[in-house]
Amino acid sequence: MTTSTTDALLARLQARFEGRLESATVSHGTITLEIQGARIREIGTALRDDPQFDFAQLSDLCGVDYLSYGEADWVTEDATSSGFSRAVGRGAVGAQPGHGERFAVVYHLLSLSANRRLRLRAWVGGEPPAIASVVDIWPSANWFEREAFDLFGILFDGHPDLRRILTDYGFIGHPFRKDFPLEGYVEMRYDPDKGRVVYQPVSIDNRVLVPRVIRDDSRYAHPQEGGASA
Image (cartoon, rainbow, N blue to C red; front, side, top):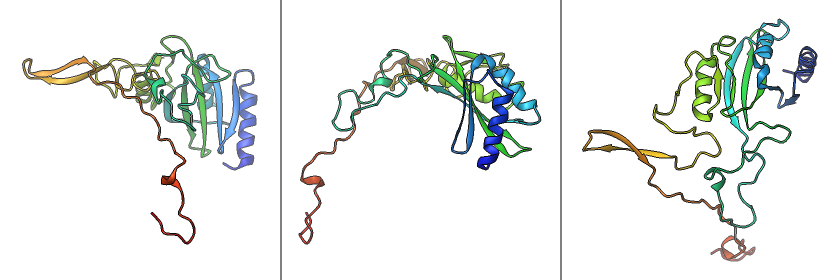
């Protein structure tokens, strides 16, 4: 969309949903609407059915975990002893600045008639986090919602078949959560005595990764002009 078309659509969206949007912004030519999860069905239905929007297709849906949002993984000037350890330990729950929720669900919408796209971000609260399903609004959400449930542990109320889709049936936890251990909780192996695959507590030791440190020594010094290189 051109800038003028995007601005015109943004104005119509703000007028149509006045008082119901957390924010409405434009980034890289795409409009992002932020809402509270409780409004997803109301606003989603309007975005699909209102002729001035006609977002009839859901092209993608994903979960987001804002645990420790904005914190640096490591100090860039010196090596640290923590590395990626924030993803290993179960620390305090964080959230994006300005919001109390840790999780969000992002919907990418497409209007085929107008050839334009919209990003809708719904903040999800509760433990476990839960939001209404939009399968009956956009049928393509079916497997997308199952994926977000499997990887982030977000429940979609009203989903016709909410079960894991990528991990095993006996899998413990949700691997895309920021506090999920890098080595996992369990491992599986083939037990020749039982003649089948069995699960057991993970046996590998966590290894803290430390980023490379650039040192000020001769290894990184450029050869003097006209001199022989090492």
